Image (tube, rainbow, N blue to C red; front, side, top):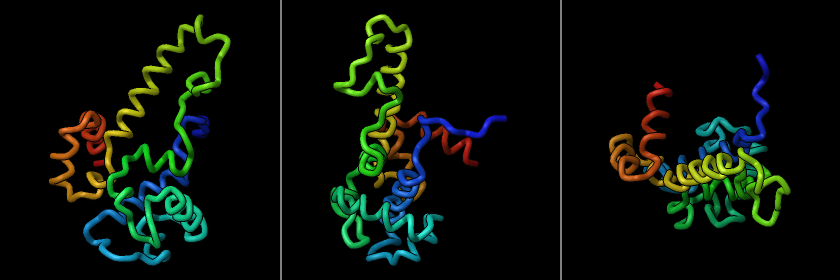
Length: 158
């Protein structure tokens, strides 16, 4: 079996950033959280986590280890793009980066459709809804376009 080494894989930094944002958005996290406490809660190494925190702060999602108003309103897409930049499944989908084969490529419409579906799911998943108690999560996710995805994710996690 091959090792997972896909360029379509979420970076470790983006994964930790999502964990941080969810943790800081929980009702139990009402005040400033220490770096060691945050590292323990997210399973991230402190040294790496401090760099993630700097990127989140630079993008206005947190301030002094407190979640900002912008951070409370953020989606998973916002957090991932704050860490990794714009998300593209394939280089041919990057704006301004024209692929010579785009017009004749039978795969291009599929890449575009997959890209849009992924962005829709990530945009529809708010940090606030992910940090809400499980009963509220179901109600919030049920109203979003990401409903089916998150229902499946919960089933596979159990």
